[in-house]
Image (cartoon, rainbow, N blue to C red; front, side, top):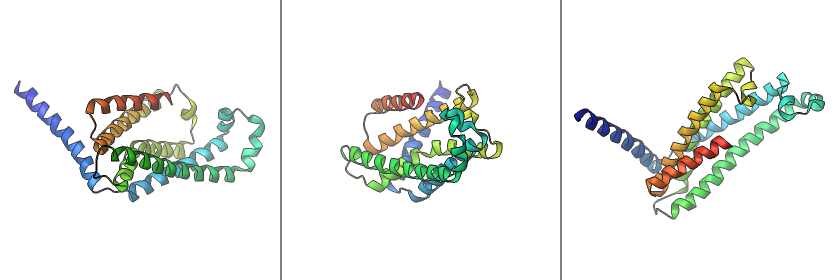
Length: 201
């Protein structure tokens, strides 16, 4: 009984430290460095995936446009650079839009909130996906294998992706709670909704 009690105390202490970390992070936000790192990872991933898809011819299978094979080969650099720019802008705008959205939502629940704290939290929640993107990029870079992206039966990639989705959903829940202080049961429901939507999409 005492062991169970000690284990429960340890778990509560661990959970408390997690929430405390995010509270401290909100007070002393770090935005620029993680933002730049994640931006570079996204752009690098776009470059590696696009160039590998074109070089291996797998883009024909994905797009189902074999008759345009010469178009992709002749305009390879343009397509890759456009993809890199699109990836960078997509990441930038997603951070901006989510930051503004959660800033206004947070301001409805708490008074001491600023846009820098919210933006830093939004960047922080993208880190799990950033790690997956980085590992995927490195794998493709050394193996020139991108088939797992379109192969739905790749169990290993599916399990890793599922774990990242779970971690990301939990992070979203913690961050929403840190920013709004709403009921934890509502947070759990939100986490489940986020996870299900990630798996469906």
